[in-house]
Image (cartoon, rainbow, N blue to C red; front, top):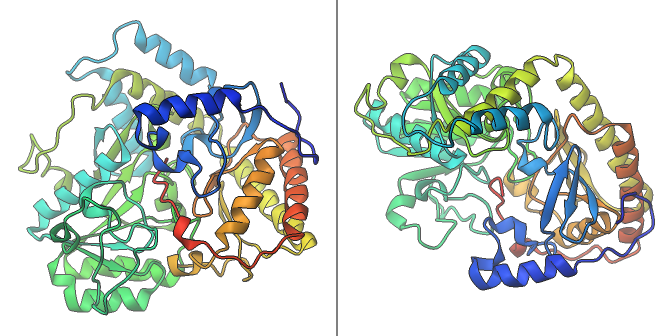
Length: 465
Protein backbone atom coordinates (compact mmCIF):
# COMPACT_ATOMS: atom_id res chain seq x y z
CA UNK A 1 0.00 0.00 0.00
CA UNK A 2 1.36 3.40 -0.95
CA UNK A 3 1.50 5.56 2.15
CA UNK A 4 4.16 8.17 1.36
CA UNK A 5 4.02 11.19 -0.91
CA UNK A 6 7.07 11.96 -2.97
CA UNK A 7 8.04 13.80 -6.12
CA UNK A 8 8.17 10.65 -8.25
CA UNK A 9 5.08 9.40 -10.04
CA UNK A 10 4.40 6.04 -8.43
CA UNK A 11 2.04 3.59 -10.10
CA UNK A 12 -1.12 3.12 -8.06
CA UNK A 13 -3.37 0.14 -8.70
CA UNK A 14 -6.91 1.00 -9.74
CA UNK A 15 -8.33 -2.43 -10.56
CA UNK A 16 -10.85 -2.40 -7.71
CA UNK A 17 -12.00 1.15 -8.46
CA UNK A 18 -12.32 0.28 -12.15
CA UNK A 19 -14.36 -2.82 -11.35
CA UNK A 20 -16.64 -0.91 -8.98
CA UNK A 21 -17.06 1.89 -11.51
CA UNK A 22 -18.08 -0.62 -14.19
CA UNK A 23 -20.63 -2.17 -11.84
CA UNK A 24 -21.90 1.27 -10.80
CA UNK A 25 -22.39 2.40 -14.42
CA UNK A 26 -24.68 -0.58 -14.95
CA UNK A 27 -27.05 0.48 -12.17
CA UNK A 28 -26.46 4.23 -11.60
CA UNK A 29 -26.47 7.10 -14.14
CA UNK A 30 -22.82 7.73 -15.04
CA UNK A 31 -21.76 5.38 -12.26
CA UNK A 32 -21.97 8.07 -9.56
CA UNK A 33 -24.56 9.74 -7.35
CA UNK A 34 -23.27 13.29 -7.91
CA UNK A 35 -21.77 14.33 -11.28
CA UNK A 36 -18.34 15.75 -10.41
CA UNK A 37 -17.34 12.45 -8.78
CA UNK A 38 -17.18 10.81 -12.20
CA UNK A 39 -13.88 12.60 -13.10
CA UNK A 40 -15.30 13.52 -16.53
CA UNK A 41 -13.60 16.94 -16.60
CA UNK A 42 -10.21 15.55 -15.55
CA UNK A 43 -10.24 12.07 -17.09
CA UNK A 44 -9.27 8.74 -15.63
CA UNK A 45 -10.98 6.42 -13.19
CA UNK A 46 -12.70 7.88 -10.14
CA UNK A 47 -11.36 6.42 -6.93
CA UNK A 48 -13.88 4.46 -4.90
CA UNK A 49 -13.16 5.23 -1.26
CA UNK A 50 -13.11 2.51 1.36
CA UNK A 51 -12.22 4.53 4.45
CA UNK A 52 -11.12 7.93 5.71
CA UNK A 53 -9.12 9.08 8.70
CA UNK A 54 -7.85 12.53 9.60
CA UNK A 55 -6.49 14.19 6.46
CA UNK A 56 -6.41 10.99 4.41
CA UNK A 57 -8.60 8.79 2.23
CA UNK A 58 -7.91 5.14 1.38
CA UNK A 59 -9.42 3.74 -1.80
CA UNK A 60 -10.69 0.27 -2.66
CA UNK A 61 -7.23 -0.69 -3.96
CA UNK A 62 -5.56 0.23 -0.68
CA UNK A 63 -3.94 3.45 -1.91
CA UNK A 64 -3.88 6.29 0.60
CA UNK A 65 -4.41 9.88 -0.55
CA UNK A 66 -3.91 13.19 1.18
CA UNK A 67 -7.41 14.65 0.91
CA UNK A 68 -8.28 18.26 0.07
CA UNK A 69 -12.00 17.71 -0.51
CA UNK A 70 -13.13 16.86 3.01
CA UNK A 71 -16.41 15.46 1.69
CA UNK A 72 -16.75 18.84 -0.11
CA UNK A 73 -16.48 20.85 3.08
CA UNK A 74 -18.09 19.14 6.09
CA UNK A 75 -14.90 17.58 7.47
CA UNK A 76 -13.41 20.77 8.87
CA UNK A 77 -11.94 18.80 11.78
CA UNK A 78 -10.75 15.88 9.68
CA UNK A 79 -12.32 12.56 8.78
CA UNK A 80 -13.74 10.13 11.33
CA UNK A 81 -13.39 12.49 14.28
CA UNK A 82 -13.75 10.39 17.47
CA UNK A 83 -16.10 12.91 19.13
CA UNK A 84 -18.48 12.78 16.16
CA UNK A 85 -18.28 9.02 15.81
CA UNK A 86 -18.98 8.54 19.52
CA UNK A 87 -21.90 10.99 19.47
CA UNK A 88 -23.52 9.15 16.55
CA UNK A 89 -22.93 5.78 18.22
CA UNK A 90 -24.54 7.06 21.41
CA UNK A 91 -27.58 8.33 19.52
CA UNK A 92 -27.79 5.12 17.48
CA UNK A 93 -28.49 2.94 20.49
CA UNK A 94 -31.80 4.75 20.99
CA UNK A 95 -33.03 4.49 17.39
CA UNK A 96 -32.35 5.88 13.91
CA UNK A 97 -35.45 8.01 13.23
CA UNK A 98 -38.53 8.94 15.23
CA UNK A 99 -40.75 11.03 12.96
CA UNK A 100 -41.34 13.12 16.07
CA UNK A 101 -39.38 15.87 17.81
CA UNK A 102 -36.44 15.06 20.08
CA UNK A 103 -34.10 16.90 22.42
CA UNK A 104 -31.05 16.90 20.12
CA UNK A 105 -32.77 19.06 17.51
CA UNK A 106 -33.62 21.58 20.22
CA UNK A 107 -30.02 21.58 21.45
CA UNK A 108 -28.62 22.07 17.95
CA UNK A 109 -31.13 24.83 17.16
CA UNK A 110 -30.14 26.61 20.38
CA UNK A 111 -26.46 26.32 19.45
CA UNK A 112 -26.96 27.55 15.88
CA UNK A 113 -29.05 30.54 16.93
CA UNK A 114 -26.54 31.47 19.62
CA UNK A 115 -23.54 31.25 17.28
CA UNK A 116 -25.08 32.94 14.25
CA UNK A 117 -27.47 35.46 15.81
CA UNK A 118 -30.59 34.30 13.94
CA UNK A 119 -33.83 34.10 15.91
CA UNK A 120 -35.27 30.89 14.49
CA UNK A 121 -33.90 27.90 12.56
CA UNK A 122 -35.62 25.03 10.72
CA UNK A 123 -33.69 21.82 9.98
CA UNK A 124 -33.97 19.97 6.68
CA UNK A 125 -31.91 17.17 5.11
CA UNK A 126 -29.76 18.94 2.51
CA UNK A 127 -28.48 22.30 1.33
CA UNK A 128 -30.79 22.12 -1.68
CA UNK A 129 -33.79 21.76 0.62
CA UNK A 130 -32.56 24.71 2.67
CA UNK A 131 -32.24 27.14 -0.25
CA UNK A 132 -35.43 25.95 -1.91
CA UNK A 133 -37.35 26.41 1.34
CA UNK A 134 -35.83 29.83 2.04
CA UNK A 135 -36.91 31.08 -1.36
CA UNK A 136 -40.44 29.76 -0.91
CA UNK A 137 -40.49 31.54 2.43
CA UNK A 138 -39.33 34.80 0.84
CA UNK A 139 -42.11 34.55 -1.73
CA UNK A 140 -44.63 33.90 1.00
CA UNK A 141 -43.46 36.85 3.06
CA UNK A 142 -43.29 39.38 0.21
CA UNK A 143 -46.10 38.15 -2.03
CA UNK A 144 -43.71 38.44 -5.00
CA UNK A 145 -42.66 35.64 -7.38
CA UNK A 146 -39.32 36.66 -8.95
CA UNK A 147 -35.92 35.93 -7.43
CA UNK A 148 -32.42 37.03 -8.36
CA UNK A 149 -29.23 34.98 -8.29
CA UNK A 150 -25.69 35.47 -9.61
CA UNK A 151 -23.91 33.79 -12.49
CA UNK A 152 -21.91 30.81 -11.35
CA UNK A 153 -23.42 30.76 -7.85
CA UNK A 154 -24.73 27.27 -7.11
CA UNK A 155 -27.62 26.90 -4.69
CA UNK A 156 -28.61 23.29 -5.17
CA UNK A 157 -30.54 21.49 -7.87
CA UNK A 158 -34.06 22.84 -7.38
CA UNK A 159 -35.57 23.86 -10.73
CA UNK A 160 -35.67 27.57 -10.05
CA UNK A 161 -32.00 27.60 -9.01
CA UNK A 162 -30.52 25.63 -11.91
CA UNK A 163 -30.28 28.85 -13.88
CA UNK A 164 -26.91 30.28 -14.89
CA UNK A 165 -25.49 27.89 -12.30
CA UNK A 166 -22.32 27.26 -14.24
CA UNK A 167 -21.39 25.30 -17.35
CA UNK A 168 -21.45 27.00 -20.74
CA UNK A 169 -25.04 28.23 -20.59
CA UNK A 170 -24.19 31.83 -19.78
CA UNK A 171 -26.11 33.84 -22.37
CA UNK A 172 -28.14 36.83 -21.27
CA UNK A 173 -29.94 37.26 -24.59
CA UNK A 174 -29.45 41.01 -24.36
CA UNK A 175 -32.11 41.43 -21.68
CA UNK A 176 -31.36 42.81 -18.23
CA UNK A 177 -31.47 39.89 -15.82
CA UNK A 178 -32.63 37.33 -18.40
CA UNK A 179 -31.44 33.78 -17.86
CA UNK A 180 -31.32 30.33 -19.41
CA UNK A 181 -31.76 26.96 -17.67
CA UNK A 182 -28.52 25.15 -16.85
CA UNK A 183 -30.12 21.71 -17.05
CA UNK A 184 -32.47 19.79 -19.26
CA UNK A 185 -35.79 19.25 -17.53
CA UNK A 186 -36.00 22.80 -16.16
CA UNK A 187 -39.04 24.46 -17.80
CA UNK A 188 -38.40 27.87 -19.32
CA UNK A 189 -41.33 29.12 -17.26
CA UNK A 190 -39.33 28.43 -14.10
CA UNK A 191 -36.22 30.02 -15.55
CA UNK A 192 -38.14 33.20 -16.34
CA UNK A 193 -38.89 33.63 -12.64
CA UNK A 194 -35.16 33.72 -11.87
CA UNK A 195 -33.29 36.89 -12.81
CA UNK A 196 -29.51 36.83 -13.07
CA UNK A 197 -26.75 39.34 -12.47
CA UNK A 198 -22.95 39.11 -12.45
CA UNK A 199 -21.32 38.36 -9.11
CA UNK A 200 -19.01 41.17 -7.98
CA UNK A 201 -20.60 43.70 -10.37
CA UNK A 202 -22.30 46.26 -8.10
CA UNK A 203 -23.29 48.53 -11.00
CA UNK A 204 -25.12 45.71 -12.77
CA UNK A 205 -26.92 44.77 -9.54
CA UNK A 206 -27.97 48.36 -8.86
CA UNK A 207 -29.25 48.74 -12.43
CA UNK A 208 -31.25 45.53 -12.26
CA UNK A 209 -32.76 46.45 -8.92
CA UNK A 210 -33.72 49.89 -10.19
CA UNK A 211 -35.67 48.30 -13.04
CA UNK A 212 -36.99 45.08 -11.52
CA UNK A 213 -36.49 45.39 -7.76
CA UNK A 214 -40.20 45.91 -7.08
CA UNK A 215 -40.87 42.43 -8.51
CA UNK A 216 -38.26 40.55 -6.49
CA UNK A 217 -39.04 38.40 -3.48
CA UNK A 218 -35.39 37.74 -2.74
CA UNK A 219 -31.78 38.02 -3.82
CA UNK A 220 -29.81 34.86 -3.02
CA UNK A 221 -26.02 34.76 -3.10
CA UNK A 222 -22.94 32.87 -1.95
CA UNK A 223 -21.00 35.22 0.36
CA UNK A 224 -17.81 33.57 -0.91
CA UNK A 225 -18.37 31.59 -4.09
CA UNK A 226 -17.08 28.05 -4.10
CA UNK A 227 -18.68 26.40 -7.12
CA UNK A 228 -17.10 28.62 -9.75
CA UNK A 229 -13.83 28.28 -7.94
CA UNK A 230 -13.30 30.58 -4.97
CA UNK A 231 -14.52 34.10 -5.79
CA UNK A 232 -14.08 36.75 -3.11
CA UNK A 233 -16.66 39.56 -2.81
CA UNK A 234 -15.49 43.15 -3.07
CA UNK A 235 -16.61 45.72 -0.46
CA UNK A 236 -18.51 47.57 -3.20
CA UNK A 237 -20.44 44.44 -4.12
CA UNK A 238 -21.30 43.70 -0.50
CA UNK A 239 -22.66 47.24 -0.13
CA UNK A 240 -24.79 46.78 -3.27
CA UNK A 241 -26.15 43.52 -1.86
CA UNK A 242 -27.42 45.30 1.22
CA UNK A 243 -29.11 47.95 -0.96
CA UNK A 244 -31.50 45.33 -2.37
CA UNK A 245 -33.43 45.60 0.90
CA UNK A 246 -34.39 49.15 -0.06
CA UNK A 247 -36.60 47.60 -2.75
CA UNK A 248 -38.45 45.31 -0.33
CA UNK A 249 -36.61 42.15 -1.37
CA UNK A 250 -35.20 39.76 1.22
CA UNK A 251 -31.46 39.10 1.19
CA UNK A 252 -30.59 35.39 1.49
CA UNK A 253 -27.03 34.28 2.25
CA UNK A 254 -26.32 30.75 1.05
CA UNK A 255 -23.80 29.59 3.66
CA UNK A 256 -24.17 25.90 2.87
CA UNK A 257 -20.46 25.88 2.06
CA UNK A 258 -19.12 28.78 4.14
CA UNK A 259 -21.23 28.38 7.28
CA UNK A 260 -18.95 27.50 10.22
CA UNK A 261 -16.16 27.05 7.65
CA UNK A 262 -14.81 30.62 7.65
CA UNK A 263 -15.68 31.46 11.25
CA UNK A 264 -18.09 30.31 13.96
CA UNK A 265 -20.46 32.85 12.42
CA UNK A 266 -19.54 31.85 8.89
CA UNK A 267 -18.92 34.33 6.10
CA UNK A 268 -21.80 36.40 7.48
CA UNK A 269 -19.77 37.23 10.56
CA UNK A 270 -16.44 37.41 8.78
CA UNK A 271 -17.68 39.90 6.17
CA UNK A 272 -20.10 41.86 8.35
CA UNK A 273 -23.19 40.81 6.37
CA UNK A 274 -26.76 41.39 7.52
CA UNK A 275 -28.97 39.02 5.52
CA UNK A 276 -32.63 38.40 6.27
CA UNK A 277 -32.22 34.62 5.90
CA UNK A 278 -29.23 32.28 6.01
CA UNK A 279 -28.97 28.74 4.66
CA UNK A 280 -26.58 26.12 6.05
CA UNK A 281 -25.43 22.59 5.26
CA UNK A 282 -22.25 20.50 5.25
CA UNK A 283 -20.51 21.35 8.56
CA UNK A 284 -23.81 21.82 10.40
CA UNK A 285 -24.36 18.06 10.06
CA UNK A 286 -20.84 16.92 10.84
CA UNK A 287 -20.77 14.72 7.73
CA UNK A 288 -24.33 13.43 7.93
CA UNK A 289 -27.16 14.72 5.69
CA UNK A 290 -28.34 17.99 7.26
CA UNK A 291 -29.37 21.40 6.00
CA UNK A 292 -31.03 24.33 7.72
CA UNK A 293 -32.39 27.80 7.12
CA UNK A 294 -32.98 30.55 9.62
CA UNK A 295 -33.46 34.24 10.17
CA UNK A 296 -35.46 36.88 11.98
CA UNK A 297 -38.48 35.78 13.99
CA UNK A 298 -40.90 37.92 11.95
CA UNK A 299 -39.78 36.15 8.76
CA UNK A 300 -39.41 32.60 10.13
CA UNK A 301 -42.82 32.76 11.78
CA UNK A 302 -44.32 32.51 8.29
CA UNK A 303 -43.17 28.86 8.20
CA UNK A 304 -45.77 26.15 8.86
CA UNK A 305 -47.18 25.31 11.35
CA UNK A 306 -46.66 28.83 12.73
CA UNK A 307 -47.50 30.44 9.39
CA UNK A 308 -48.83 29.80 5.87
CA UNK A 309 -45.59 28.73 4.09
CA UNK A 310 -45.52 24.94 4.00
CA UNK A 311 -42.33 22.92 4.37
CA UNK A 312 -41.91 19.44 5.83
CA UNK A 313 -39.52 16.48 5.83
CA UNK A 314 -39.69 12.93 7.16
CA UNK A 315 -36.03 12.89 8.23
CA UNK A 316 -35.75 16.54 9.26
CA UNK A 317 -34.15 16.73 12.70
CA UNK A 318 -32.91 13.14 12.42
CA UNK A 319 -31.34 12.18 15.78
CA UNK A 320 -28.12 10.78 14.28
CA UNK A 321 -27.59 13.86 12.15
CA UNK A 322 -28.36 16.18 15.05
CA UNK A 323 -25.83 14.30 17.21
CA UNK A 324 -23.13 14.68 14.56
CA UNK A 325 -23.87 18.38 14.17
CA UNK A 326 -23.81 18.99 17.91
CA UNK A 327 -20.49 17.20 18.30
CA UNK A 328 -18.92 19.11 15.40
CA UNK A 329 -20.05 22.59 16.44
CA UNK A 330 -19.10 21.89 20.06
CA UNK A 331 -15.61 20.80 18.97
CA UNK A 332 -15.27 24.00 16.92
CA UNK A 333 -16.29 26.11 19.91
CA UNK A 334 -13.84 24.28 22.14
CA UNK A 335 -10.88 25.04 19.85
CA UNK A 336 -10.72 28.85 19.61
CA UNK A 337 -7.42 28.79 17.71
CA UNK A 338 -8.63 26.50 14.94
CA UNK A 339 -9.65 29.15 12.41
CA UNK A 340 -6.32 30.97 12.75
CA UNK A 341 -4.46 27.69 12.17
CA UNK A 342 -6.59 26.86 9.13
CA UNK A 343 -5.99 30.32 7.71
CA UNK A 344 -2.23 30.10 8.26
CA UNK A 345 -1.98 26.66 6.65
CA UNK A 346 -4.03 27.67 3.62
CA UNK A 347 -2.03 30.89 3.21
CA UNK A 348 1.20 28.87 3.13
CA UNK A 349 -0.39 26.44 0.69
CA UNK A 350 -1.40 29.32 -1.59
CA UNK A 351 2.08 30.86 -1.52
CA UNK A 352 3.72 27.51 -2.14
CA UNK A 353 1.46 26.65 -5.06
CA UNK A 354 2.11 30.03 -6.65
CA UNK A 355 5.87 29.72 -6.23
CA UNK A 356 5.89 26.18 -7.65
CA UNK A 357 3.84 27.22 -10.66
CA UNK A 358 6.01 30.26 -11.35
CA UNK A 359 9.19 28.19 -11.13
CA UNK A 360 7.77 25.82 -13.74
CA UNK A 361 6.51 28.60 -16.01
CA UNK A 362 2.87 27.62 -15.51
CA UNK A 363 0.36 30.51 -15.34
CA UNK A 364 -1.71 30.25 -12.15
CA UNK A 365 -3.78 32.75 -10.18
CA UNK A 366 -4.70 31.79 -6.61
CA UNK A 367 -7.84 32.91 -4.79
CA UNK A 368 -8.19 32.13 -1.09
CA UNK A 369 -10.41 32.94 1.88
CA UNK A 370 -9.72 31.19 5.17
CA UNK A 371 -9.48 27.45 4.51
CA UNK A 372 -10.97 27.63 0.99
CA UNK A 373 -8.68 27.90 -2.06
CA UNK A 374 -8.73 27.65 -5.84
CA UNK A 375 -5.74 27.80 -8.16
CA UNK A 376 -7.06 29.06 -11.51
CA UNK A 377 -4.92 28.06 -14.47
CA UNK A 378 -4.66 31.41 -16.20
CA UNK A 379 -2.14 34.22 -16.51
CA UNK A 380 -3.59 37.02 -14.34
CA UNK A 381 -2.50 38.45 -10.97
CA UNK A 382 -3.68 36.73 -7.81
CA UNK A 383 -7.09 37.96 -6.73
CA UNK A 384 -8.11 39.30 -10.14
CA UNK A 385 -10.43 36.38 -10.88
CA UNK A 386 -13.52 38.02 -9.43
CA UNK A 387 -16.47 36.94 -11.60
CA UNK A 388 -17.68 33.75 -13.19
CA UNK A 389 -16.74 35.19 -16.56
CA UNK A 390 -13.18 35.64 -15.27
CA UNK A 391 -13.07 32.09 -13.91
CA UNK A 392 -14.34 30.60 -17.17
CA UNK A 393 -11.19 31.82 -18.96
CA UNK A 394 -9.13 29.21 -17.07
CA UNK A 395 -7.27 26.52 -18.99
CA UNK A 396 -9.22 23.45 -17.95
CA UNK A 397 -7.04 21.13 -20.02
CA UNK A 398 -3.97 22.28 -18.11
CA UNK A 399 -5.80 21.85 -14.82
CA UNK A 400 -6.80 18.29 -15.74
CA UNK A 401 -3.17 17.36 -16.42
CA UNK A 402 -2.05 18.97 -13.16
CA UNK A 403 -4.82 17.18 -11.26
CA UNK A 404 -3.66 13.84 -12.62
CA UNK A 405 -0.09 14.71 -11.66
CA UNK A 406 -1.19 15.42 -8.09
CA UNK A 407 -3.32 12.27 -7.91
CA UNK A 408 -0.42 10.15 -9.14
CA UNK A 409 1.65 11.57 -6.28
CA UNK A 410 -0.98 10.79 -3.68
CA UNK A 411 -2.79 14.13 -3.37
CA UNK A 412 -6.55 14.07 -3.89
CA UNK A 413 -7.48 17.54 -5.17
CA UNK A 414 -10.96 18.63 -6.22
CA UNK A 415 -11.52 17.02 -9.68
CA UNK A 416 -12.69 20.25 -11.33
CA UNK A 417 -11.02 23.57 -12.07
CA UNK A 418 -14.17 25.28 -10.85
CA UNK A 419 -14.27 24.02 -7.28
CA UNK A 420 -12.79 25.06 -3.97
CA UNK A 421 -10.53 22.77 -1.98
CA UNK A 422 -10.97 22.56 1.79
CA UNK A 423 -8.31 22.40 4.47
CA UNK A 424 -9.08 20.66 7.76
CA UNK A 425 -7.70 20.80 11.27
CA UNK A 426 -6.06 17.43 10.59
CA UNK A 427 -3.71 19.02 8.03
CA UNK A 428 -0.33 19.90 9.51
CA UNK A 429 3.28 20.54 8.51
CA UNK A 430 3.76 17.00 7.20
CA UNK A 431 0.77 17.34 4.90
CA UNK A 432 1.73 20.84 3.77
CA UNK A 433 5.27 19.81 2.84
CA UNK A 434 4.06 16.70 1.03
CA UNK A 435 1.47 18.68 -0.90
CA UNK A 436 3.94 21.32 -2.06
CA UNK A 437 6.50 18.68 -3.02
CA UNK A 438 3.88 16.95 -5.14
CA UNK A 439 2.73 20.27 -6.62
CA UNK A 440 6.28 21.24 -7.61
CA UNK A 441 6.71 17.99 -9.50
CA UNK A 442 3.26 18.18 -11.11
CA UNK A 443 3.90 21.76 -12.24
CA UNK A 444 7.31 20.80 -13.62
CA UNK A 445 5.63 18.10 -15.70
CA UNK A 446 2.98 20.55 -16.86
CA UNK A 447 5.49 23.27 -17.65
CA UNK A 448 7.07 21.10 -20.30
CA UNK A 449 3.84 20.75 -22.26
CA UNK A 450 1.73 22.94 -24.52
CA UNK A 451 -0.62 24.95 -22.30
CA UNK A 452 -2.50 26.75 -25.05
CA UNK A 453 -5.63 24.62 -25.18
CA UNK A 454 -8.95 25.74 -23.77
CA UNK A 455 -11.75 23.31 -22.94
CA UNK A 456 -14.53 25.30 -21.34
CA UNK A 457 -17.11 22.74 -22.38
CA UNK A 458 -15.96 20.29 -19.73
CA UNK A 459 -16.88 22.53 -16.79
CA UNK A 460 -18.86 20.37 -14.41
CA UNK A 461 -20.94 22.01 -11.74
CA UNK A 462 -20.08 20.29 -8.51
CA UNK A 463 -22.73 21.55 -6.14
CA UNK A 464 -21.18 19.95 -3.12
CA UNK A 465 -20.58 16.79 -5.14
